[in-house]
Length: 133
Image (tube, rainbow, N blue to C red; front, side, top):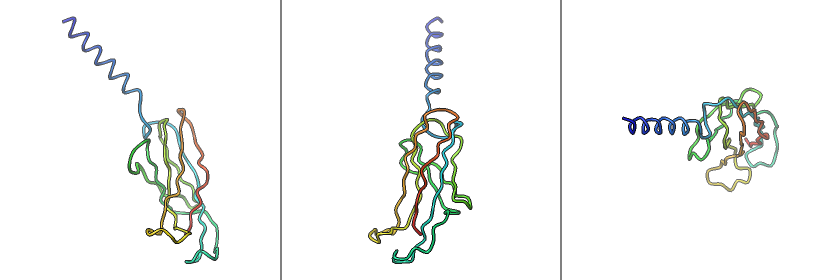
């Protein structure tokens, strides 16, 4: 019975230890936020029509080393986005922009920002992202 109790105790303590070290992602109390600025050009990208906050734009976040996006939000009328309830870790934020060089077959590319949350209850401001429309 003593061996059984010791084995149970080891499994219990291992579970508690490993459950405390979590990867990047949801379940925390930190926030990442930023703003997207749209640069609206004509079809040939030779004439700038206007610069304004990119309202209702999709913004994606990748948690840690995930291969695809983990969450998607849309910007406010002011071009602001926010990802809440995150744990400390590494994150990738991105939004899509038209290709101003007119050389990409897809005509779009991802504007990417790498972000690190180092502590709990941290709010991280991301450098503005410039996209072309």
